[in-house]
Image 1: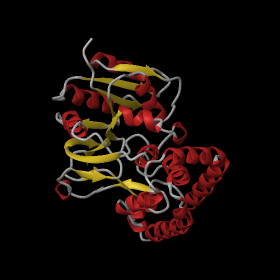
Image 2: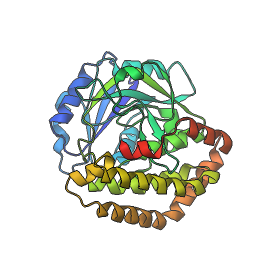
Image 3: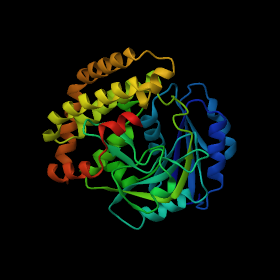
Length: 335
């Protein structure tokens, strides 16, 4: 049996032609000692066709969510590195080679962010992630020209749409939190890794083209609820205590920007309305998300305490780190 350096984990729900294009791009990788595991969340065996392209397929009885699917691939592999890739992403031939070359040069790097481009454009989807003071995370560089971010540099954490993780880091952090189901699970994992002192590199040579929110839509009802619920979980689990009172005020500021931009026909809230949703429904999803978070407070508190017990970074250093990689309320509402 050949030695596997990287396991590429691809969760899929639709298992459509986008997945086929994704797998085809992996067949052209210049790095060859890797395997592909497709996690079929359809519950109907729709991804069996992936086996004809050399991928292993893990059939799930139902949609277990993104993070839990990645965890299943991790448990089924032994490679020292785990790459995550959305099923609607197409990797350039040097993608894996660039990521592995970067991470192997620095033992303190536990995760790498790709240069994720909007499909068919010279504009970015993400080159790492940024964080707002209320726990909201957004793609660094989203919509900006590729040329604006040309160098390898440290970023806060990667978007799991196309990322590389060191197995040792995943073992130490405890993998993705499956309770997130969709959205922000990469933010939560990255922040937990940061408490443990792991770093993240943006690797511009690792290029992927991504059909942004192909599966759930750019501003769907499902996304509106889970993004709000999960940013509260990110906040409760990972933010230093001194930042929590300010987070509530920051959230009010963000809501105000959403409302103002919606009236002007701009931003994410306006896009939500253009997709046929009443603006008042956003208020309902905010209330629903807060209620769900309150119900989970005991579990979130236990997770928070476990993170702090193992932390190698002081709260002061952690606060500095979050501020170095921050985003404004207006930017969150606009993206």
